[in-house]
Length: 505
Image (cartoon, rainbow, N blue to C red; front, side):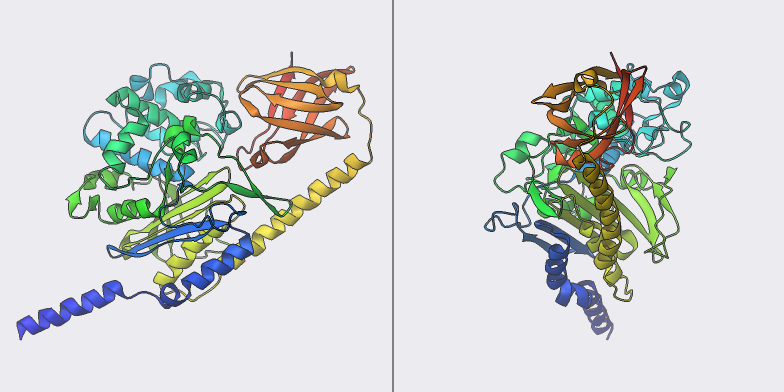
Protein backbone atom coordinates (compact mmCIF):
# COMPACT_ATOMS: atom_id res chain seq x y z
CA UNK A 1 0.00 0.00 0.00
CA UNK A 2 2.87 2.34 0.88
CA UNK A 3 4.52 1.61 -2.48
CA UNK A 4 1.26 2.48 -4.29
CA UNK A 5 1.02 5.74 -2.28
CA UNK A 6 4.53 6.76 -3.29
CA UNK A 7 3.89 5.82 -6.92
CA UNK A 8 0.72 7.95 -7.04
CA UNK A 9 2.52 10.83 -5.29
CA UNK A 10 5.38 10.69 -7.77
CA UNK A 11 2.89 10.67 -10.66
CA UNK A 12 1.08 13.72 -9.25
CA UNK A 13 4.38 15.61 -8.83
CA UNK A 14 5.38 14.66 -12.39
CA UNK A 15 2.07 15.89 -13.82
CA UNK A 16 2.30 19.12 -11.84
CA UNK A 17 5.85 19.68 -13.02
CA UNK A 18 4.88 19.42 -16.68
CA UNK A 19 1.47 21.11 -16.46
CA UNK A 20 1.61 24.44 -18.27
CA UNK A 21 -0.84 27.36 -18.28
CA UNK A 22 -3.31 27.43 -21.15
CA UNK A 23 -1.70 30.63 -22.47
CA UNK A 24 1.66 28.88 -22.83
CA UNK A 25 0.24 25.68 -24.32
CA UNK A 26 -2.36 27.10 -26.68
CA UNK A 27 -1.84 30.84 -27.24
CA UNK A 28 1.86 31.68 -27.11
CA UNK A 29 2.61 31.36 -30.84
CA UNK A 30 -0.43 33.39 -31.86
CA UNK A 31 0.30 36.03 -29.25
CA UNK A 32 3.96 36.46 -30.25
CA UNK A 33 3.23 36.56 -33.98
CA UNK A 34 0.49 39.15 -33.53
CA UNK A 35 2.46 41.36 -31.15
CA UNK A 36 5.56 41.25 -33.37
CA UNK A 37 3.43 42.71 -36.14
CA UNK A 38 2.04 45.36 -33.81
CA UNK A 39 5.54 46.48 -32.77
CA UNK A 40 7.17 45.83 -36.18
CA UNK A 41 9.71 43.44 -34.64
CA UNK A 42 11.62 41.56 -37.40
CA UNK A 43 12.97 38.76 -35.22
CA UNK A 44 12.43 37.40 -31.72
CA UNK A 45 13.65 34.44 -29.69
CA UNK A 46 12.26 33.15 -26.41
CA UNK A 47 13.12 30.48 -23.88
CA UNK A 48 11.03 29.44 -20.87
CA UNK A 49 12.21 27.02 -18.19
CA UNK A 50 10.00 25.70 -15.40
CA UNK A 51 10.72 23.17 -12.66
CA UNK A 52 14.04 22.22 -14.22
CA UNK A 53 12.54 21.58 -17.66
CA UNK A 54 12.81 23.54 -20.91
CA UNK A 55 9.22 24.43 -21.83
CA UNK A 56 9.89 26.69 -24.82
CA UNK A 57 13.04 27.31 -26.86
CA UNK A 58 12.12 28.93 -30.13
CA UNK A 59 12.72 31.66 -32.69
CA UNK A 60 10.20 33.78 -34.60
CA UNK A 61 10.53 36.05 -37.59
CA UNK A 62 13.73 36.90 -39.44
CA UNK A 63 17.30 38.00 -38.82
CA UNK A 64 17.03 40.69 -41.51
CA UNK A 65 13.69 42.32 -42.21
CA UNK A 66 14.23 42.34 -46.00
CA UNK A 67 15.31 38.69 -46.22
CA UNK A 68 12.32 36.42 -45.50
CA UNK A 69 14.52 33.34 -45.80
CA UNK A 70 16.72 34.45 -42.86
CA UNK A 71 14.68 32.69 -40.18
CA UNK A 72 15.43 33.15 -36.48
CA UNK A 73 15.86 29.92 -34.50
CA UNK A 74 16.99 29.01 -30.99
CA UNK A 75 20.65 29.26 -32.05
CA UNK A 76 20.43 32.72 -33.62
CA UNK A 77 22.76 35.26 -32.00
CA UNK A 78 21.67 38.61 -30.56
CA UNK A 79 23.67 41.29 -28.79
CA UNK A 80 22.33 40.87 -25.25
CA UNK A 81 24.00 44.07 -24.00
CA UNK A 82 23.42 44.67 -20.26
CA UNK A 83 22.25 41.13 -19.63
CA UNK A 84 26.04 40.67 -19.56
CA UNK A 85 26.13 42.39 -16.16
CA UNK A 86 24.79 39.36 -14.28
CA UNK A 87 27.77 37.35 -15.54
CA UNK A 88 30.15 40.05 -14.37
CA UNK A 89 28.51 40.32 -10.96
CA UNK A 90 28.63 36.55 -10.57
CA UNK A 91 32.27 36.40 -11.70
CA UNK A 92 33.35 38.98 -9.12
CA UNK A 93 31.26 37.31 -6.39
CA UNK A 94 32.97 34.02 -7.28
CA UNK A 95 36.43 35.57 -6.93
CA UNK A 96 35.29 37.06 -3.62
CA UNK A 97 34.26 33.57 -2.45
CA UNK A 98 37.69 32.25 -3.46
CA UNK A 99 39.38 35.10 -1.49
CA UNK A 100 41.12 36.33 -4.65
CA UNK A 101 39.54 39.72 -4.10
CA UNK A 102 37.08 41.30 -1.70
CA UNK A 103 33.85 42.94 -2.73
CA UNK A 104 34.32 45.43 0.10
CA UNK A 105 37.93 46.30 -0.64
CA UNK A 106 38.81 49.65 -2.21
CA UNK A 107 39.01 49.59 -6.00
CA UNK A 108 42.39 51.36 -5.85
CA UNK A 109 43.82 48.26 -4.14
CA UNK A 110 43.43 46.43 -7.44
CA UNK A 111 43.56 49.33 -9.90
CA UNK A 112 45.98 51.98 -8.58
CA UNK A 113 45.11 54.27 -11.51
CA UNK A 114 41.37 54.29 -10.67
CA UNK A 115 39.94 57.70 -9.83
CA UNK A 116 36.48 59.16 -9.40
CA UNK A 117 35.81 62.88 -9.80
CA UNK A 118 36.77 63.71 -6.19
CA UNK A 119 39.41 62.14 -4.00
CA UNK A 120 37.09 61.28 -1.09
CA UNK A 121 34.83 59.19 -3.33
CA UNK A 122 37.90 57.54 -4.86
CA UNK A 123 39.13 56.44 -1.45
CA UNK A 124 35.69 55.22 -0.37
CA UNK A 125 34.78 53.35 -3.56
CA UNK A 126 34.74 49.56 -3.24
CA UNK A 127 34.35 46.81 -5.81
CA UNK A 128 30.78 46.34 -4.59
CA UNK A 129 30.04 50.01 -5.35
CA UNK A 130 31.02 49.40 -8.98
CA UNK A 131 28.48 46.61 -9.29
CA UNK A 132 25.38 48.26 -7.85
CA UNK A 133 25.26 51.69 -9.53
CA UNK A 134 25.91 53.97 -6.57
CA UNK A 135 28.85 56.07 -7.78
CA UNK A 136 26.78 59.27 -7.75
CA UNK A 137 26.54 59.59 -11.52
CA UNK A 138 23.21 59.85 -13.29
CA UNK A 139 21.90 56.88 -15.26
CA UNK A 140 23.90 56.53 -18.52
CA UNK A 141 26.08 59.53 -17.63
CA UNK A 142 29.23 59.41 -19.73
CA UNK A 143 27.88 56.94 -22.28
CA UNK A 144 27.82 59.74 -24.86
CA UNK A 145 31.60 59.32 -24.77
CA UNK A 146 31.87 55.58 -24.15
CA UNK A 147 29.18 53.80 -26.16
CA UNK A 148 30.36 52.72 -29.61
CA UNK A 149 33.52 54.81 -29.28
CA UNK A 150 37.13 54.12 -30.22
CA UNK A 151 38.28 54.17 -26.57
CA UNK A 152 39.83 51.19 -24.81
CA UNK A 153 38.33 49.74 -21.65
CA UNK A 154 41.11 51.29 -19.56
CA UNK A 155 40.47 54.69 -21.14
CA UNK A 156 36.79 54.41 -20.21
CA UNK A 157 37.77 53.64 -16.61
CA UNK A 158 40.10 56.65 -16.63
CA UNK A 159 37.21 58.78 -17.92
CA UNK A 160 35.41 58.34 -14.58
CA UNK A 161 37.85 60.84 -13.07
CA UNK A 162 36.48 63.48 -15.47
CA UNK A 163 32.82 62.55 -14.97
CA UNK A 164 31.35 65.06 -12.52
CA UNK A 165 28.63 63.20 -10.59
CA UNK A 166 25.11 64.59 -10.41
CA UNK A 167 24.54 63.17 -6.91
CA UNK A 168 26.67 62.58 -3.80
CA UNK A 169 28.51 59.26 -3.65
CA UNK A 170 26.23 56.33 -2.65
CA UNK A 171 23.31 58.75 -2.28
CA UNK A 172 21.17 57.77 -5.25
CA UNK A 173 20.96 55.01 -7.86
CA UNK A 174 22.52 55.93 -11.20
CA UNK A 175 23.03 53.20 -13.80
CA UNK A 176 26.73 53.14 -14.68
CA UNK A 177 28.15 51.09 -17.53
CA UNK A 178 31.61 52.48 -16.74
CA UNK A 179 31.35 51.02 -13.23
CA UNK A 180 30.90 47.52 -14.63
CA UNK A 181 33.69 48.02 -17.17
CA UNK A 182 35.90 48.91 -14.22
CA UNK A 183 34.84 45.70 -12.46
CA UNK A 184 35.93 43.79 -15.57
CA UNK A 185 39.36 45.41 -15.28
CA UNK A 186 39.47 44.33 -11.61
CA UNK A 187 39.00 40.74 -12.82
CA UNK A 188 41.96 41.23 -15.16
CA UNK A 189 44.09 42.70 -12.37
CA UNK A 190 43.34 39.91 -9.87
CA UNK A 191 43.45 36.89 -12.21
CA UNK A 192 45.74 38.01 -15.04
CA UNK A 193 42.86 36.85 -17.25
CA UNK A 194 40.66 39.12 -19.33
CA UNK A 195 36.98 39.37 -18.52
CA UNK A 196 36.29 37.67 -21.88
CA UNK A 197 38.49 34.64 -21.16
CA UNK A 198 37.28 34.37 -17.57
CA UNK A 199 33.69 34.07 -18.80
CA UNK A 200 34.68 31.61 -21.51
CA UNK A 201 36.36 29.17 -19.13
CA UNK A 202 34.28 29.67 -15.97
CA UNK A 203 30.83 30.05 -17.56
CA UNK A 204 30.40 29.41 -21.28
CA UNK A 205 32.34 26.14 -21.61
CA UNK A 206 31.07 24.47 -18.39
CA UNK A 207 27.50 25.48 -19.25
CA UNK A 208 27.72 24.18 -22.82
CA UNK A 209 27.15 27.70 -24.16
CA UNK A 210 29.17 27.00 -27.28
CA UNK A 211 27.71 29.79 -29.42
CA UNK A 212 28.13 32.54 -26.83
CA UNK A 213 30.91 35.07 -27.49
CA UNK A 214 32.06 38.52 -26.37
CA UNK A 215 33.42 40.19 -29.51
CA UNK A 216 32.11 42.20 -32.43
CA UNK A 217 34.12 40.07 -34.88
CA UNK A 218 32.54 36.83 -33.67
CA UNK A 219 29.05 38.24 -34.18
CA UNK A 220 29.78 39.80 -37.58
CA UNK A 221 31.32 36.60 -38.92
CA UNK A 222 28.56 34.27 -37.70
CA UNK A 223 26.12 33.06 -40.36
CA UNK A 224 23.33 32.69 -37.82
CA UNK A 225 23.39 36.15 -36.24
CA UNK A 226 20.79 38.90 -36.37
CA UNK A 227 21.36 42.30 -37.84
CA UNK A 228 20.14 45.24 -35.72
CA UNK A 229 17.10 47.29 -36.74
CA UNK A 230 15.24 50.40 -35.69
CA UNK A 231 12.32 52.52 -36.83
CA UNK A 232 12.90 55.89 -38.47
CA UNK A 233 9.73 57.87 -39.19
CA UNK A 234 7.77 54.64 -38.77
CA UNK A 235 9.85 52.74 -41.35
CA UNK A 236 12.08 49.78 -40.61
CA UNK A 237 15.80 50.48 -41.04
CA UNK A 238 18.59 47.92 -40.98
CA UNK A 239 21.79 49.09 -39.27
CA UNK A 240 25.41 47.94 -39.15
CA UNK A 241 26.37 46.07 -35.99
CA UNK A 242 27.86 48.49 -33.45
CA UNK A 243 31.26 47.50 -32.09
CA UNK A 244 30.90 47.53 -28.30
CA UNK A 245 33.95 45.42 -27.45
CA UNK A 246 35.19 48.26 -25.25
CA UNK A 247 32.02 48.03 -23.13
CA UNK A 248 33.27 44.62 -22.03
CA UNK A 249 31.94 43.59 -18.63
CA UNK A 250 28.95 45.91 -18.95
CA UNK A 251 27.49 44.84 -22.29
CA UNK A 252 29.60 42.80 -24.73
CA UNK A 253 28.05 39.30 -24.73
CA UNK A 254 26.46 37.87 -27.89
CA UNK A 255 24.24 34.84 -27.30
CA UNK A 256 21.16 32.83 -28.24
CA UNK A 257 18.28 31.38 -26.24
CA UNK A 258 19.55 27.87 -26.92
CA UNK A 259 22.64 28.69 -24.87
CA UNK A 260 21.07 31.00 -22.34
CA UNK A 261 18.42 28.54 -21.23
CA UNK A 262 21.29 26.75 -19.46
CA UNK A 263 22.06 29.98 -17.59
CA UNK A 264 18.41 30.09 -16.47
CA UNK A 265 18.47 26.46 -15.34
CA UNK A 266 21.69 26.99 -13.40
CA UNK A 267 20.38 30.15 -11.73
CA UNK A 268 17.20 28.41 -10.63
CA UNK A 269 19.13 25.43 -9.26
CA UNK A 270 21.57 27.41 -7.09
CA UNK A 271 24.53 26.99 -9.41
CA UNK A 272 23.92 23.40 -10.51
CA UNK A 273 23.39 22.16 -14.06
CA UNK A 274 22.85 18.51 -15.04
CA UNK A 275 23.69 17.38 -11.52
CA UNK A 276 27.02 19.24 -11.40
CA UNK A 277 27.76 22.19 -9.08
CA UNK A 278 29.32 24.62 -11.57
CA UNK A 279 29.03 27.81 -9.51
CA UNK A 280 29.04 27.60 -5.68
CA UNK A 281 25.62 28.20 -4.14
CA UNK A 282 27.01 30.88 -1.83
CA UNK A 283 28.11 32.85 -4.90
CA UNK A 284 24.60 32.76 -6.36
CA UNK A 285 23.23 33.88 -2.99
CA UNK A 286 25.70 36.79 -2.83
CA UNK A 287 24.55 38.08 -6.22
CA UNK A 288 20.97 38.30 -4.93
CA UNK A 289 21.58 40.52 -1.91
CA UNK A 290 20.09 43.99 -2.25
CA UNK A 291 22.76 46.70 -2.32
CA UNK A 292 21.01 49.79 -3.67
CA UNK A 293 17.45 51.08 -3.83
CA UNK A 294 16.21 51.74 -7.37
CA UNK A 295 13.70 54.57 -7.57
CA UNK A 296 11.85 53.39 -10.64
CA UNK A 297 8.95 51.31 -9.30
CA UNK A 298 6.31 51.38 -12.03
CA UNK A 299 2.96 51.24 -10.25
CA UNK A 300 0.97 52.33 -13.30
CA UNK A 301 0.78 48.87 -14.86
CA UNK A 302 1.96 46.76 -11.93
CA UNK A 303 0.02 47.73 -8.83
CA UNK A 304 1.49 44.87 -6.80
CA UNK A 305 5.08 46.04 -7.32
CA UNK A 306 6.32 47.71 -4.15
CA UNK A 307 10.11 47.75 -4.28
CA UNK A 308 13.05 47.57 -6.67
CA UNK A 309 16.68 47.12 -5.67
CA UNK A 310 19.96 46.43 -7.44
CA UNK A 311 22.07 43.48 -6.34
CA UNK A 312 25.27 42.46 -8.19
CA UNK A 313 24.35 42.57 -11.87
CA UNK A 314 20.65 41.95 -11.25
CA UNK A 315 17.65 44.10 -10.45
CA UNK A 316 15.28 42.63 -7.87
CA UNK A 317 11.63 43.51 -7.23
CA UNK A 318 8.34 42.00 -6.11
CA UNK A 319 5.66 40.90 -8.56
CA UNK A 320 2.28 39.64 -7.38
CA UNK A 321 3.82 38.51 -4.11
CA UNK A 322 6.86 36.84 -5.66
CA UNK A 323 10.47 37.93 -5.73
CA UNK A 324 11.65 38.55 -9.30
CA UNK A 325 15.30 38.76 -10.32
CA UNK A 326 15.70 40.40 -13.71
CA UNK A 327 17.75 42.48 -16.08
CA UNK A 328 17.26 44.08 -19.46
CA UNK A 329 19.74 44.93 -22.19
CA UNK A 330 19.74 47.54 -24.93
CA UNK A 331 22.22 47.99 -27.77
CA UNK A 332 21.89 49.71 -31.14
CA UNK A 333 19.13 47.67 -32.78
CA UNK A 334 18.60 45.15 -29.95
CA UNK A 335 16.57 45.03 -26.72
CA UNK A 336 16.55 41.91 -24.54
CA UNK A 337 15.30 40.66 -21.18
CA UNK A 338 16.01 38.00 -18.54
CA UNK A 339 13.57 37.22 -15.69
CA UNK A 340 13.81 34.69 -12.87
CA UNK A 341 11.17 33.78 -10.29
CA UNK A 342 12.99 31.39 -7.93
CA UNK A 343 9.91 30.67 -5.78
CA UNK A 344 8.13 29.37 -8.88
CA UNK A 345 11.27 27.75 -10.34
CA UNK A 346 10.52 29.81 -13.45
CA UNK A 347 12.80 31.62 -15.88
CA UNK A 348 12.13 33.54 -19.11
CA UNK A 349 14.35 35.23 -21.70
CA UNK A 350 13.22 37.26 -24.70
CA UNK A 351 15.57 38.66 -27.34
CA UNK A 352 14.57 41.04 -30.18
CA UNK A 353 16.52 42.54 -33.08
CA UNK A 354 15.06 46.04 -33.03
CA UNK A 355 15.49 48.70 -30.36
CA UNK A 356 12.11 50.27 -31.17
CA UNK A 357 9.88 47.98 -29.10
CA UNK A 358 8.81 47.13 -25.57
CA UNK A 359 7.57 43.67 -26.51
CA UNK A 360 10.78 42.15 -25.13
CA UNK A 361 9.72 43.20 -21.61
CA UNK A 362 5.94 42.86 -22.04
CA UNK A 363 6.26 39.26 -23.25
CA UNK A 364 8.29 38.30 -20.18
CA UNK A 365 5.61 39.84 -17.96
CA UNK A 366 2.89 38.06 -19.94
CA UNK A 367 4.57 34.71 -19.31
CA UNK A 368 5.05 35.46 -15.61
CA UNK A 369 1.41 36.45 -15.19
CA UNK A 370 0.27 33.24 -16.88
CA UNK A 371 2.34 31.07 -14.52
CA UNK A 372 1.27 33.09 -11.48
CA UNK A 373 -2.39 32.46 -12.34
CA UNK A 374 -3.22 36.14 -12.77
CA UNK A 375 -6.25 37.20 -14.87
CA UNK A 376 -5.33 37.63 -18.53
CA UNK A 377 -4.57 41.11 -19.81
CA UNK A 378 -2.56 42.05 -22.89
CA UNK A 379 0.53 43.66 -21.35
CA UNK A 380 2.04 44.26 -24.78
CA UNK A 381 -1.00 46.24 -25.91
CA UNK A 382 -0.85 48.32 -22.72
CA UNK A 383 2.83 49.09 -23.32
CA UNK A 384 2.17 49.90 -26.97
CA UNK A 385 -0.65 52.34 -26.25
CA UNK A 386 1.51 54.13 -23.73
CA UNK A 387 4.58 54.25 -25.98
CA UNK A 388 2.61 55.55 -28.94
CA UNK A 389 1.64 58.62 -26.93
CA UNK A 390 5.30 59.35 -26.28
CA UNK A 391 6.24 58.69 -29.91
CA UNK A 392 3.46 60.94 -31.16
CA UNK A 393 4.60 63.72 -28.83
CA UNK A 394 8.18 63.39 -30.06
CA UNK A 395 7.06 63.30 -33.69
CA UNK A 396 4.99 66.45 -33.18
CA UNK A 397 7.96 68.21 -31.61
CA UNK A 398 10.34 67.23 -34.43
CA UNK A 399 7.78 68.18 -37.09
CA UNK A 400 7.44 71.65 -35.57
CA UNK A 401 11.23 72.03 -35.67
CA UNK A 402 11.42 70.86 -39.28
CA UNK A 403 8.60 73.23 -40.23
CA UNK A 404 10.68 76.06 -38.76
CA UNK A 405 13.74 74.86 -40.70
CA UNK A 406 11.66 74.94 -43.89
CA UNK A 407 11.19 78.71 -43.40
CA UNK A 408 14.90 79.04 -44.22
CA UNK A 409 15.65 81.55 -41.49
CA UNK A 410 19.14 82.99 -41.49
CA UNK A 411 21.44 82.62 -38.47
CA UNK A 412 22.85 85.75 -36.82
CA UNK A 413 26.37 84.84 -37.91
CA UNK A 414 27.84 83.47 -41.10
CA UNK A 415 28.08 79.69 -41.23
CA UNK A 416 31.88 79.91 -41.26
CA UNK A 417 31.74 81.62 -37.86
CA UNK A 418 30.34 78.45 -36.30
CA UNK A 419 33.16 76.32 -37.69
CA UNK A 420 36.04 75.29 -35.49
CA UNK A 421 37.22 72.90 -32.80
CA UNK A 422 35.28 72.62 -29.55
CA UNK A 423 36.40 70.88 -26.38
CA UNK A 424 34.68 69.17 -23.43
CA UNK A 425 36.62 67.98 -20.37
CA UNK A 426 34.93 64.56 -20.42
CA UNK A 427 34.49 63.83 -24.10
CA UNK A 428 37.42 65.56 -25.73
CA UNK A 429 36.96 67.33 -29.04
CA UNK A 430 34.33 67.82 -31.71
CA UNK A 431 34.70 69.80 -34.90
CA UNK A 432 32.15 71.83 -36.81
CA UNK A 433 32.96 72.04 -40.50
CA UNK A 434 31.28 73.52 -43.55
CA UNK A 435 30.77 70.72 -46.09
CA UNK A 436 29.09 71.56 -49.41
CA UNK A 437 27.37 74.56 -47.89
CA UNK A 438 26.10 72.65 -44.82
CA UNK A 439 27.45 72.57 -41.29
CA UNK A 440 28.44 69.14 -40.01
CA UNK A 441 29.52 67.90 -36.59
CA UNK A 442 32.47 65.49 -36.35
CA UNK A 443 33.12 63.62 -33.08
CA UNK A 444 36.68 62.74 -32.11
CA UNK A 445 35.87 59.37 -30.55
CA UNK A 446 33.06 58.37 -32.94
CA UNK A 447 34.63 58.78 -36.40
CA UNK A 448 31.80 56.87 -38.09
CA UNK A 449 29.08 59.11 -36.68
CA UNK A 450 28.58 62.55 -38.24
CA UNK A 451 25.88 65.08 -37.40
CA UNK A 452 24.24 67.11 -40.17
CA UNK A 453 23.20 70.54 -38.85
CA UNK A 454 20.14 72.42 -40.12
CA UNK A 455 19.45 75.91 -38.78
CA UNK A 456 16.27 76.31 -36.74
CA UNK A 457 16.40 79.73 -35.08
CA UNK A 458 18.15 81.63 -32.26
CA UNK A 459 21.48 79.87 -32.89
CA UNK A 460 19.84 76.47 -32.60
CA UNK A 461 20.49 73.75 -35.17
CA UNK A 462 18.84 70.38 -35.62
CA UNK A 463 21.49 67.65 -35.57
CA UNK A 464 20.68 64.50 -37.55
CA UNK A 465 23.25 61.80 -36.78
CA UNK A 466 24.35 59.23 -39.33
CA UNK A 467 24.16 56.70 -36.49
CA UNK A 468 20.37 56.67 -36.30
CA UNK A 469 20.42 55.32 -32.74
CA UNK A 470 21.83 58.69 -31.65
CA UNK A 471 18.62 60.27 -32.89
CA UNK A 472 17.71 63.75 -34.08
CA UNK A 473 18.47 66.39 -31.46
CA UNK A 474 18.56 70.22 -31.32
CA UNK A 475 22.00 71.70 -30.59
CA UNK A 476 22.52 75.22 -29.21
CA UNK A 477 25.43 77.56 -29.85
CA UNK A 478 26.25 80.18 -27.22
CA UNK A 479 27.02 83.59 -28.71
CA UNK A 480 28.67 86.50 -26.92
CA UNK A 481 29.65 89.79 -28.62
CA UNK A 482 29.04 88.19 -32.03
CA UNK A 483 31.52 85.43 -31.21
CA UNK A 484 30.69 81.72 -30.85
CA UNK A 485 31.72 80.61 -27.35
CA UNK A 486 30.39 77.05 -27.11
CA UNK A 487 27.99 74.44 -28.42
CA UNK A 488 25.80 72.14 -26.33
CA UNK A 489 25.57 68.64 -27.82
CA UNK A 490 23.11 65.85 -27.06
CA UNK A 491 22.36 62.35 -28.33
CA UNK A 492 19.21 60.26 -27.82
CA UNK A 493 18.20 59.35 -24.27
CA UNK A 494 18.65 55.69 -25.27
CA UNK A 495 22.40 56.38 -25.00
CA UNK A 496 22.77 59.31 -22.57
CA UNK A 497 20.21 61.54 -20.88
CA UNK A 498 22.57 64.48 -20.36
CA UNK A 499 23.71 67.32 -22.62
CA UNK A 500 27.40 68.28 -22.87
CA UNK A 501 28.84 71.73 -23.44
CA UNK A 502 31.87 72.03 -25.73
CA UNK A 503 33.85 75.27 -25.55
CA UNK A 504 35.26 76.71 -28.77
CA UNK A 505 39.04 76.71 -28.92
